Length: 334
Image (cartoon, rainbow, N blue to C red; front, side, top):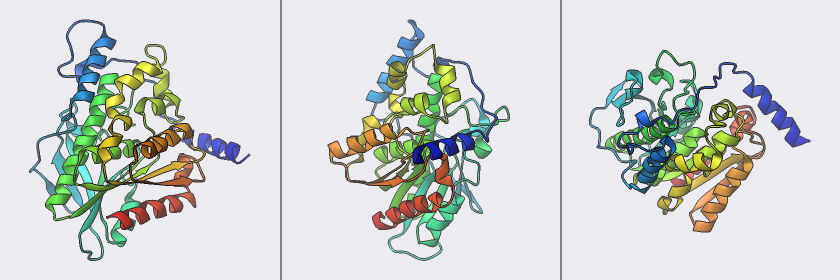
């Protein structure tokens, strides 16, 4: 009965947004520099994806010196240039800690997919009040980075296989450059916090960025493709994928942007895994699978289970429970 209540609430909250568009399926080979020439499109994308997964430097980029802090807004160039000029300048909002702390602590915050510019600002302000500076990153194709033809951030998750790979890679490279800026400001202990899509990106960044000491991952899954295929929030994306591709192939093609291959890279970092018991967007079986993967590998982690769903996490009192778990974890591990 409780599950039915939350599932109905989740569907009502989903229905508030009426601007979802079913976009056509595309292999996106034009986004994949160096993809093999000739052969079937699926084979070419698969070869490119396999090479990306095997490349230890796929999430690496040259260091950046071109940072501009104007008030509380940090701007810097992205490491992966896209066809949309607006998306090639990274924007982040800086919330310095309100009280002195030694050693200096900071957290990079990655909001959820389609978050507006105010998303997670309250959480950043809370972190700053407890002595942890926060830097809120605008994900690719969000906020000021959204080109005029979009009303939603469709280009980061869509039925275009190659574009989804590269834009999520871009987000991780942006996160690493943002962490580099925090280190240049003298922060000695740096964490990362991500929600939903931001959680996936935060784990990828934490697995590849040695400056990250702790990662708070809010809504979790081991596989990018499975969430898109099975989740309530991405049903319109699934509608564009269904037919030209199946889940098994999609999972393989999007494996480079999935947490699963990189779990062992987390090493001794402290990790918080948060999921919602009645989540229809990040199906619970996927969250439980990632937790089991962490346990099987002996990766240091804590688990918090919220008594709500995905969208209802943003509603009182669940947003307070979630915020308390995230902030407490970061205070204890930074």
